[in-house]
Image (cartoon, rainbow, N blue to C red):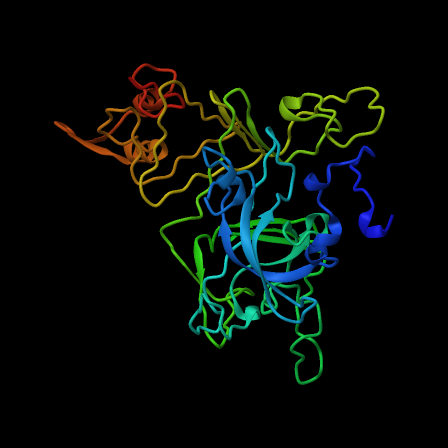
Length: 391
């Protein structure tokens, strides 16, 4: 039996009916043995009818987002446009954990020239879309997917500048040393962890638009952009009602986590041995739950506003200090219906001591005993008091 006449076997070594078999030799032109780099042209969310998954589902609910990619450096030496390129997640994406991050499609040319959607006489390096590496599942040209991401060839501004770039007249490099950092920017929101371990989060450039021109003027080390000052950049942290939010500047205790409870997820010796106990807090702590908010500071706490400062609560609010509590304002009133400002005690005492009263027999001073009684907090008629009760 010749090679062309040999029977086609299935994976379980059984013989497959010839009319139902697919001979790989008939599809060699679909085999791809290499990866391609390219720029993303279009992006289609999973439920877009352009995706194969949405087309196959009666309710048009797809699973994978897809994109079209213009590949460079192919074996033929020409540009290759691939459609239905799957965008796999960068992390676990099952029924519980889920991750989604779609790339930026191309919509402009970075030098400001017109964008031709037909890609005629177009330099793919100058498109503003994200770049990627395309692989092929089973080396099949009809099953492309994004295997990794790739640097944009024209973005040399965001990348680390630890090289000897822009030397001065003496030959010394003026470049920054940014090696060791971790930098991520998503929709203009920046996350930076320095090599020293400092963490920066900035929403300054949230909802920003890139500016395209032949000349590039970097903005804070990145591509020139214009930001909508009125939209984007807000931060909301929603905490489960049964849980708390804590900020603590006290030294950590090995193995102790939220609410000073033991947590085996924290870095600690193994086996843990005797559980350490939390020490009395000596530095600033902030503890917030759905019912309580407690801020403890060892030395000084200031609340300052140029307009109106109000503390409102349907229940109780306590402000305590070990030594002295200072309220500084041109007018301080106590009580929700108060129409008089709080009397300045020491100034009142000095004023009363120097006050001259006209009597029938001539000028007279107020009896010092009466002044003491008037300002004594232990008497019922005291005005200057360390304890104030309001209705």
